[in-house]
Structures are given as C-alpha cells and as structure tokens.
Length: 345
Image 1 (cartoon, rainbow, N blue to C red):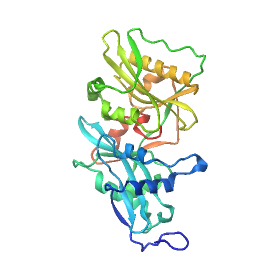
Image 2 (spheres, rainbow, N blue to C red; image 1 turned 90 degrees about the horizontal axis):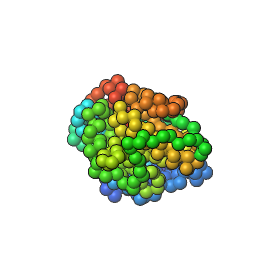
Image 3 (cartoon, one colour; image 1 turned 120 degrees about the horizontal axis):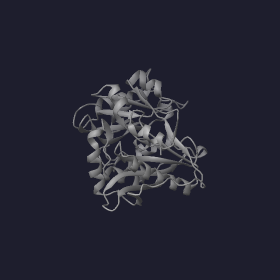
C-alpha cells in the first residue's frame, strides 16, 4: 500500500521478477500511467502496439524486468527490445533498453538507489551475458537517468548520436539517378534482402541482422507509423544492390524527413546516389524541407553521404552500452547503426 502522502512505504512488499505471459495489460497500464500525457501530445500506447513491439518482434523474446506489488500491480518496468545481431563474425543477440518506467510514488522504494536501479541491476544480471538466452550487448539512448545508470549499472558512452542533414525545397533540382540503376518503393522486402545482407555481413563488425523478417516487422508491420521502403536494383538484371527506409517524424524538429534504415556496400557510391535521390524526392513531395540520417562516425558511409552534400550537426542524444564480451572501443569503432536501431522515429 501507499501512505496518505502518496509515497510508497519502503516496507511495502515489491517483487522484482521477469515478465511472464499474462502481464501485458498490467505492464501497459504502468507505461501509460508514467508516459501518457495529453497536454504534451503523448497519447496512451495501445495494446496492439505493445504486442507488436515486445511480443511479435522476430527474436520471439520478451526481456523485461518488472516490479510488482501485491495490491498495486506492476509499479515499475525495465523494458528492452531484443534483436539478432552479427558480432565479431558470429550471430548473437543484443537488446535495446527502452520504455523504462517507475510510477512516481515508487521511485525511492527500497533504499538509496531506488527502484529503477534495482530493476536495472536485476535486468542485467538476468539477460546480459554469453548464454543462449542472453544478449552480448545492451544499449540505449539514455536521458535524465544517465548519471544513475552510469554510477549504479555500469553504462558507458559509445558514440554521439549526430545527424547528417540536407535542406530541401520543392524547387530544388532532383539528384541525377545513375543510368544503370532503378529505385522503386515496395510494400515489403523479399528474400533477396536476405541475400543482400549475407553479402554485406562479413564487412560488419557489429550490426543488427537486416533481413526481410526484421525489416518487414520493424517498418512494414508497424501498427501506427508509416514508412516508405525503397529497393535499388540493377537494370536490366534486377539484382538488388541496396535498400532504404524513409519516414517522417517529429524528432528534434516537427515534420522532418528521415532516412531511417539503410543497406548498401561501403564502396557502392552509385547505389547511395540512387537511394538518396529517391529519399530526397519523397522528402520534397512531403514538403518537410529537410532530410536527416544517423551513422556511426567511423563507418565509410558517414563520409560518403557528406560527399553527397550532407552536413553534420550534433544532438543531445548519445549511445550508451553495457557489454558482456567485447570492450567499448570495439563497439565505438565497428558498430553499424542507423536511426532505425532506436525506437525514436
């Protein structure tokens, strides 16, 4: 129970345990109690959205640690979104730490570090590791809780989260499309996306497995957001050379166009040109005035997109990690990530 002042009593029993089937409604209620705010335009998350994100994701893993009170139900959640990765030449799993929430009355429950840190430590103890049910890497984009996570949970900063951007107006001349390539929007990615990722995989130090199953779940099947899926193919063979996902969001600036995901060989500048032409054309059509993307500073594509006329600006975001195997430098230098590796857009 809680006291008359609305704060939780440290003697109230709270059980910290993993998510179990049947917890969905209680977890969603906790999330919406903390995050939903009509005054700020934050609508409650639907159960369909929650199930898509955490139950239907292609890993078939639900990795969440809950704080449960016998009368109040779920009062805290340390959530995550598992993904298959290629890492150091082998397949494994990572998990993105997302949607952490503790009901305000329970933030200080349990002593000096509070309930959030206890949930986080229980989460890492259970799911960060080299076992078959564990993730080699836990990563996130922390906000106000960063200092507590660094001090109590060992989070380390891997990379800044900088944007590349290009201003666009409807009157700008379209980028020239390489004559040997064509780009089309598709409803879903097909089996040759698997083949494309398999060709590129040896060049990645660490990367989410961008196969058709993952990309279609992440973008085509999203219950609320709409994305444009582009394929770049050779003429006339039809061989797939690259894919790009385009979306519009309000991150950092309202109504902005983003390259949300991207897959192409590092030295294939024609494919980058063709995909950028398609994404820029859609941004002009949408009238957003700006096309942005996110890259690791050490990735060759980061330099290549600047050679295509894009500038770089910083943001307040940064990538933080906890690793069970490789050191921080490995991920800082060799992690291939895009905006789609977050859940921000």
